[in-house]
Image (cartoon, rainbow, N blue to C red; front, side, top):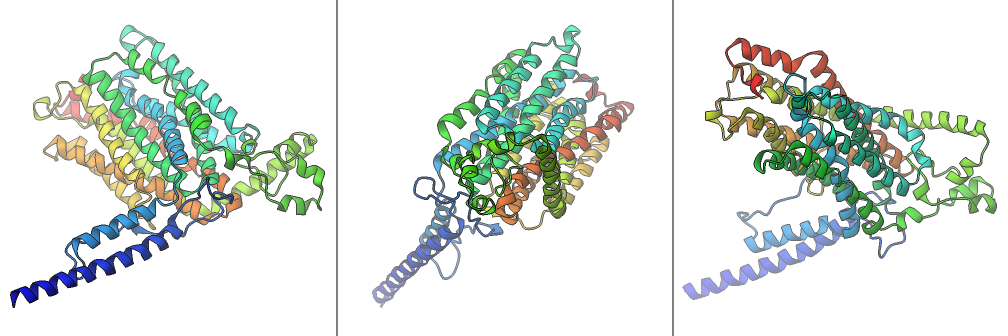
Length: 512
């Protein structure tokens, strides 16, 4: 009797596994069609011609306790969906854009992590934030109207030269402890900021030609930049004990990775496609003008695919430049205004988290005997590293998690700001490890809103306008960061919190 029941159970499990396998195949095939990115080796179509329908929510996890499925079939289904999520990804494209995101942002993070050592305890850290973001904001506002005349290949070299020069100025300027002024250092910060801002709008525009996975790789790379940049500075200066000068000098070599990624790793064929034949139709079949159409590499964020090439624009009379400028203004207004509601959460989140990072975090201090630190200087870079860890995890989540509503996260970030300001004033959280958890949560929210905002733009904007839209929306996060810097400096947030603490017998903020 027991043997017969056992055989029935075994037979049922076999049937379950067969059904589960069939379901996995169907799901994998269907999901692969929906989620697969373009294959540059086997397809001649435009990499961004078909944008997959956004799938909101998280990738389903295996359900080992489900009544109708065995653990093996649940895990098999999960693996099938994971494979489907990455079906069609080109390794070279993913690697190149991950490195673009990493290197373009890592110097920005290193500079913010070094803010205390650059300006000293008596200068608001938000000064460094403003010098690190305002030039980036300006270039993002202005560059779309002229950067299209600069080929991508030349831009990469320009970004490397400018950013490396900026880091050398930072490293070689005398430290404040030796009586050095911050003028030269801020000049270095400005140069690095210009390169980072122009790089962000260029690389995000470039993702239009390489499909969904390039955007996911870029987002993950920028998240890794935060983690690696903050961790690098914290480890080299605190754990290893290298000087600030040596740490910054070593980082000045990092931009060279962008050159290697662009010229050796990234497939160049999507940048050499010819402008669509609609141009020929508008010219009435004029083959001479079609011969002047240049590669897409020579076109930029505002180069209209229905207009002439860069070559024909250059050879036109000066009046055409004026007409094109106003045409570009009309295009930008038509693209940005409809998506204002989509980019406002990004501004709100970045305002809150950068006000936390640069003005509130330096005052989130505890007695050293209650912490793992031996000096008060260690709090600030540790907070930065934990925050960037959260950013890296959430910015890498796009293939697995899509969020349709972002405003709630924006308001949650405001609550985090209020919570940490109250902690700075009253120290009601009993342990520094709880503050670590809150800082980590701040990073998670920031990364989620960043990648989902750009993913929504890529999903919703028509293909012919997508390159410009992805670059133009970068203004929103820079605007939020700039506002946070202004509030921090003009409002005296850090100084006010520190003065409050000193007035109540907690003078730790003066010992940084």
